[in-house]
Length: 357
Ligand code: PMP
Image 1 (cartoon, protein in one colour):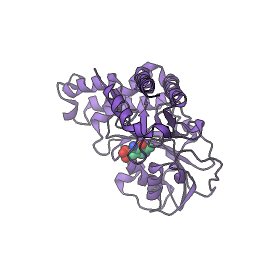
Image 2 (spheres, helix red, strand yellow):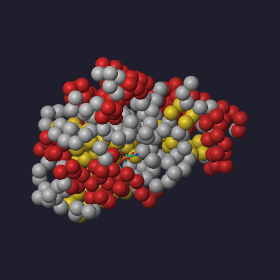
Image 3 (cartoon, helix red, strand yellow):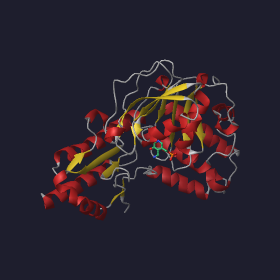
Image 4 (cartoon, helix red, strand yellow):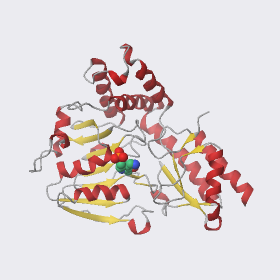
């Protein structure tokens, strides 16, 4: 039997995705060839790419005037592609974690960066609010889900300047109003696919406004014109992403997925709040992530952290260690994680309490 996979990323994918991809790795679309050994320009793979883009647009109700791209380089390459393509002089960033900070650092290579607010002082345990975004910045960058700290911006905000969002760890976890964003991007290795493909949703009209020369591969327009086939795309991860999109549709779409995510998160947060051995690390309940649930042992049980980890591991919990920079525990409850896995973790926490309190 498989262990319960709470890994933060790469992370759990639907069985459907794993099975269909495994089949295609042996015999892709009846070609008798492996998905790993066919041309990305074969008619069978072009059909996969087209369908993946179409389903991406359908499931997120992406309006006209936006392009969906599947690229290499991870979300980290987007940290520099965004300012390269969008920043004429000035940009604004909300510093909600290490990834937001890394994104902001790259933008500084291109001009003035205004950090509108930061929760760094308290190890990013809340989402700052009430800040002012400079009206003359070329865009405002946010990280909707902070994978390491378990905070999440769960609503699409209104912004007077183009809004850019890193949704690496919460894409497809809820419906989004794409029309509020100029660009949305992320590494696909959490809710979508194995590592190796990066998704970008870009509003076409925001491009072409900077004077600088942009290297061909770092220019969004190159990939829009090439329909994500300017160079060889990550064939296997794109195929897997399409299977996950089919699975999401089968579940009832992103609204149904959101409901399941809310139920899973409520189950675990409820245990964290009611079990005297544990406490959550995010200070405001409204900032709590539905994707990465972070908690620590309460002060009087601190010395039992290793024991709980070993106990939970012995019961089949995998990947619950907090990020090495913050410690404690982190249970990632991405779309594909069944509620039964969350229940199994809750059972572990209760059993541990019954033997120690
Ligand atoms: N942004 C967020 C929110 C992330 O969680 C991660 C990776 N965990 C990244 C960016 C970096 O992604 P990549 O490894 O694809 O560059």
